[in-house]
Image (cartoon, rainbow, N blue to C red; front, side, top):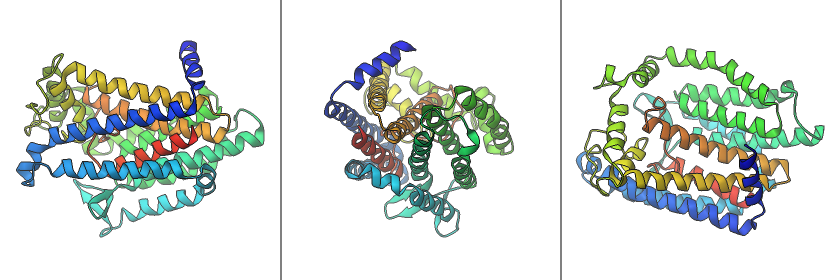
Length: 375
């Protein structure tokens, strides 16, 4: 563990301009890979269902361009202005989470009401709320650190953060979206640990939350089916276990070098959500172990550079916000890869910068812009 700490410390001595360039170009490369793979994984479905094989490609290019603009907006923002506005941003995010549940405003897809239609973009307020929660909590914890001149130990004083998170989580669960709620909670735990709370406190809170998560999972028939399918996908290979099985077939059939770009078989209506949640499986099938290793290496490099940028910070707010953003992206990546590999039950979370999606791409790149400004 000390070796990792020293690695980050060594990287933290790198000039801030070099760190920014490394983070920016790594993200840009991931986005470019995403555009190629979204087209490769979606063109049969787009041709069959929409009549335009380039439908998702064009939209992903537009989303990525808007994301690039959002990145530069995030980079240009004054961190102190963002900090002072964190409470109002949190209130605005909660209002949007409430509006998405209103029929006629929120868009319902597949039984879930998670989106607000904004032109060609289906905006998902929960993705914005995750980031705003981290901004709000980073400001709150930083102020407490200054007041107490050191490590935080009093969980009771953290009640405002827990209350805000509880309201946010409740609204997201009504959509329903347990995956986003779980990732938000995990990122908040990472933030608490980074703020100086004892690890035993964080683990205790995690253990206390497990019974509630179990109730939420097993009280919902479709969530229960997902868990049972994850434990034994071959018990229901044509329904609940179908995605997991097809994803593993895709990854396993890719071999070392893959079948070739555009030559996936599983995307031909075998693997659902091939261009969104399960795009990594298509990468494995078409580009093989080499392709997946390249993608994993880029993510690893991005997170190492991001956490190194965190270590170099002296200001608690800047340190915590970088930690929160990188933790959130890291958790989303790990969960998506775990689902594709059959190591975790399906969560409906995209692979950052690569999966097809509008609001996720824009929010994630805006968050990277904030990191670049804070470095």
